[in-house]
Length: 218
Image 1 (cartoon, rainbow, N blue to C red):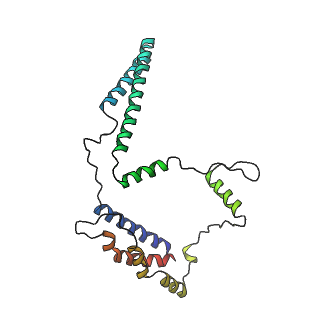
Image 2: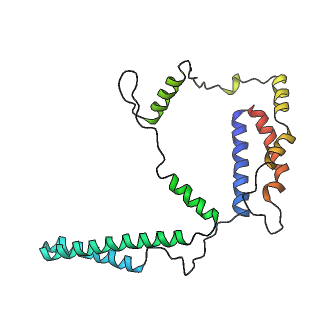
Image 3: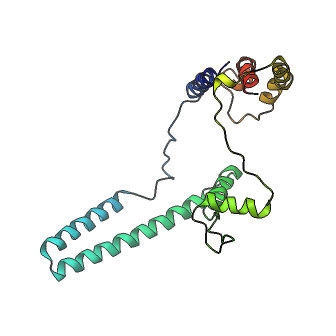
């Protein structure tokens, strides 16, 4: 089985899985409740319109009174935005009742200040110019004997598979092992109307399709 055929079958299997997922779990919009309105409203929309009109009038007339009116409208608009944002965030935090919602907020806040690899000083006293170069410097510093492998593009004509290779792939990739791996996943979706979890019901057909592909990949 050539790499082109393997890629085509993998793409077909992926498309089938995604199509089944979207059919079983269609997208839905959350229902709006009266006590959970967004912080942006019609009053802010009107204030923004007034600011734009005041700016256009000030630019057309170029009078001090027009510019003062624009700055006053802009200041009132920004003050109202800050108030609505603070009030909306306070109301949202006060409405959290489950641990799942609180954990979701905690994860979002924890990712805001995620540190990234900054510039590092190289042995020649210059600084790195990209994250990839910084990671390479870290690897070379911590693992000085590390050798970076060069990826070689092998053509399909040069690929030969012996009988021992296929026997090794059959021992490594077995249907029972793959079924055990699939059934070890925790259910992240609720069961359907019949009470059956979708990936448990489709585990055996899915594993039967994956076994030859994974063996060919070995």
